[in-house]
Length: 238
Image (cartoon, rainbow, N blue to C red; front, side):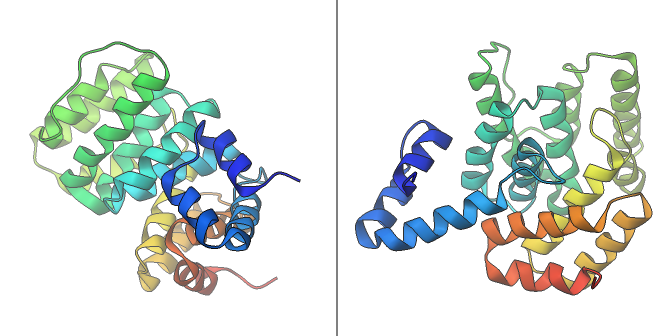
């Protein structure tokens, strides 16, 4: 049986201080938490990579850099590309605004480090326009380049509503996954009505109920039992 310490060392390469302190004070509590995390992050209708990268986006949106960075490693280890990561970090703008994009740069820089990619960095105080323009330099296809051109044009026109709509359109990341992320963001910040709204919108674009339930498990993991209360209200009874 894998212990909590062994589990987290495998996940993060080292045992994080908060894990060690939980073990030191209450090893059984760490075992229970490890079991919960293992169940929430297990592959299901959402892959492990998708769960980690959703957590990156959710935590960027709510300005929680610490958890965002932890899950960046999981996403990259799971096979996420820089372009995928960028789009999840951009969707965070729809809740957290410019600050979310600025905080998200920490995730992106860590991903560059993990992938041994040496490129120029951008200031963490850069504007929305400059961050989107910076990210556009990583677009590898004509479709992606066109996507960023639209984003930048909306920024030049100062049309925030059009920008938010465009951010949810599928590109490297599907529209469905972006709507799942929006549902998760409102779940983790305990906005009940908005969670219900985005869950309904997610179903309209083809997201399955099982995907929303699995989203709820990882929201519980990062934001506690109250997050499950919120999304459970939005789930349809079987």
